[in-house]
Image (tube, rainbow, N blue to C red):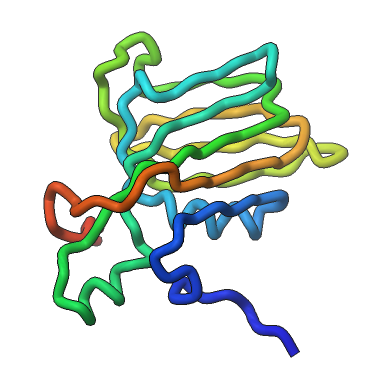
Length: 159
């Protein structure tokens, strides 16, 4: 009998996860919640059909372990990569202002015909990025060692 992986199973290893359906993407979305990204760290290569973001991702998978060890919470730089992207557009944020810092709230997928569909990256402050994809092919990969979150606190979402 097999069981699902748990956050604790990753230990201190860097994440490298793939999403090929909406259920997989929901996991990546939870891990990317509260990531901050300078607009200059977002790229879309139409020729390669690839959209990428270099995130400063809050390590949600490490919160319990940090509390148990009485140490500060962490962030890590991660690449969020979308392949098979046919179009990319944003609203509520200016793609030309490379110094603007955005915060990711959620990443969702709405299926269309034959596996195609739309990925919506919802941003804090009513902005979003919409990707038209031929198929859902997403990778989240940690690319640096974790570092102490500058705020030293867990992001909070009051109701």
